[in-house]
Length: 362
Image (cartoon, rainbow, N blue to C red):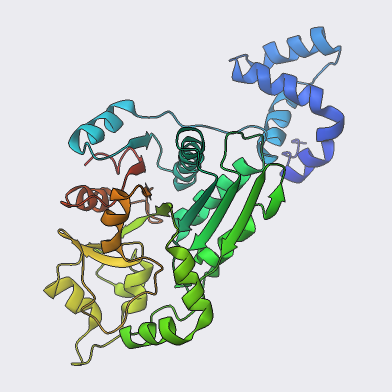
């Protein structure tokens, strides 16, 4: 009779981090040094006096990966990063990851974000840093990975981090991409030397301009969120292409899908106005853009955002930083057209970039 394949549950039941940490550590360490399973078994028998079966090294490695003890770090593409910095000298830092997995790009982005905060603390002596988070799946994954880093042994951080939601929830059927929910993945309050605070942004996802002005004059939570948002030192955002979206209902852009069906005051289709009259090619920070930069508020409705894109160049001139994270789209398509658009703008809208190698091949 053929032996039943081990499941994840079987492996979890067989090993225990607390009881078998020495064994798990030895197996993973030897594996990362390049030892074969046979060599690992021999090392364990000599060093720990334990005899493993042929399949146990594989089981232990699987267990370690399932529990976050063993992770894959894709290699950086230094040549592509160098070319991007040469193409745009305004970029402070560029990280290009050789992968087609969005999760791995987000993990690297979290590491870059951590490094940016450490540099603010060490070089500029920042005691309190305000971080603005855009919405969407890419930033969700970045925040989750960043939260894991904060829960580990990190040092040289500013004593206080304040996270701001920069947009209201735009996804009707996937509220996980609402930045107000991202705070669940970050430590809250005081933990050791680090204190974290959060500023939410509540309100309608796609109000018209008059409603936004009304909220900013009468709605105290909105007024306070926008007032505190003026302190943002660092923005983390992503971008999405509007090209090759024949079926708007299944567009790669959440913003484009939500705008579908809206009419302006003249009864014209909002998406058509943006694409045909204003040359919209994508969106950044939930705001439509074309080859020249952000598109002015020419349409009846727009996403409610804590900071307008056209405010970023001035903020950067005053010392703010903007991290753009571009990984593969959910459909697998690279976002090279989005990056090409951003780098082609005359004004400086980003300072740091993390992208996969296909996206970076602009």
